[in-house]
Image (cartoon, rainbow, N blue to C red; front, top):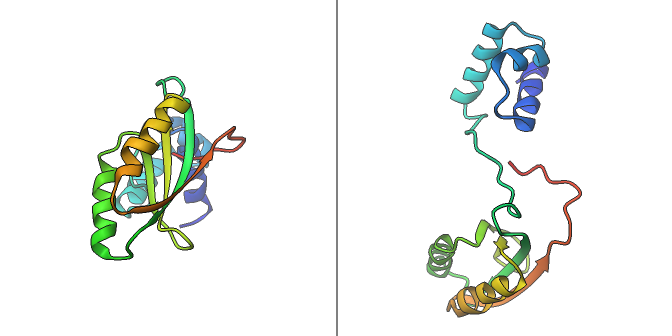
Length: 147
């Protein structure tokens, strides 16, 4: 990967719907050379896909919290059961298995505090694998480059 590939990737990260003509101009390439490079980056798995970035507030989910979850048992079966349960929860937008004092970091989106409380109490809090839950409510996001 060279500097031109990095320029292409930065431009696509900012705007995945940029036309090939505009992308070529930004990267300093001809349109055909730019398209070849993008295709090569896709085939190599560097570009894993394209998606729409949704606005949670516009979708009625303006409450965002990061939640750490500690499991009661440190077994593969407990992790798999927790992951299966979490995959069924639409409020959980991201689930990461992490190192440290707890096993998981979740990004949860809900309509409001009451909806989050319901998820916390009636969904997450009822899972038998869960031993500890800590919530960190997002008050603002001065930098957010999540794709």
